Amino acid sequence: NYRVAYATGSSPTGPWTKRGVILEKRLDLGIKGPGHHSVVQVQNTDDWYIAYHRFAIPGGDGTHRETTVDKLEFDSGGLIKKVVPTLSSITPVSGGAALPTHTNRSLQSVNFTGRYAAVRSDSLGYVDPVTSSSTTAVKQSATFTIVPGLADSTCYSFRDSSGRYLRHKDYRIRFDANNGTATFSKDATFCARPGSATGSVSLESYNYPGRYLRHYNFELRIDPFQDNATFRADSSFKAVNPWA
Image (cartoon, rainbow, N blue to C red; front, side):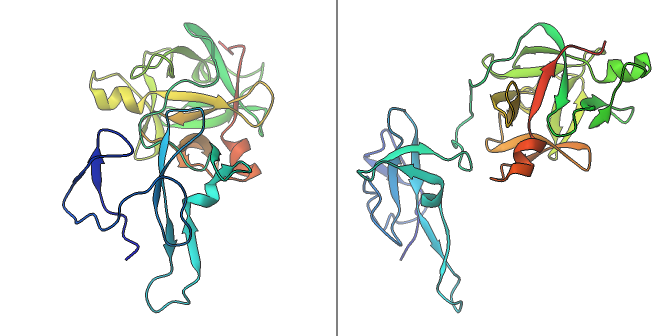
C-alpha cells in the first residue's frame, strides 16, 4: 500500500524490529521502480538512505508529486554515485571545508560584499554594512573568533568579543552565552561546506542537517537548502581579515 513503515535494525539488510506498525514490505536493496521504497547505499561511503516515491492524495489527479530519487545521481549501471545536496544525512553531519580556528575573522557575504555577519544590540544576527570608516563598535560587531565546534570539533562555532556564541533558536540566528547544555552546543555548531564562490563556505547546522546559515532581508537564519543560485549565494560567506 505504498507505506513506508518504521523499523530498526543492526545493519541495512536487517534483521528488522518493527516499531509500532506492521512492516508490510521488505525493504529490498536497490531502486525498484515507481511506488516502491528501498534502502540504498551511496557508493564508496558508509551513508545509507531510504529512497521512496510519494504520490498525489486520494481524489487528486494521481500524478507524481515528490521523490527522493530525484535528488540522487546514478552511474550507468543504475547504482547511486552521490547524493545531490538537497538531501542530507539524517544523522548529525561533520567535517567538510576548512576554516582557521582560534583566530578572529569577519564573515563577508558573497552576494553583498559590503555586508558582513554581525550581531546587533538586540542580540540577533544580521548582515550589516561595514567600512573602514565604521565605528569601532560596528567593526567589533562583525568580528568573531572561530573555534572548534562545541558539539563536534571537526565543525565550527563562532564567538563574539563578549564571549557569546552564534547559535540558532526558532531558526533565527542570535548570540547567547553558553549555558553548558547539549542543546546549546548543537545549536551553536556549524559544519563548513564549499560555498558558491571560490574561497567561500556554506555553514550547515549541526543538529538540523540540510539547513544552512543564510541571510534573508539581511536577517541571518537557518533555512532548508534550495537548489537555486540565489540560495547558494545567500548562504555563502568568506572568512576574511577581521574588522576588529
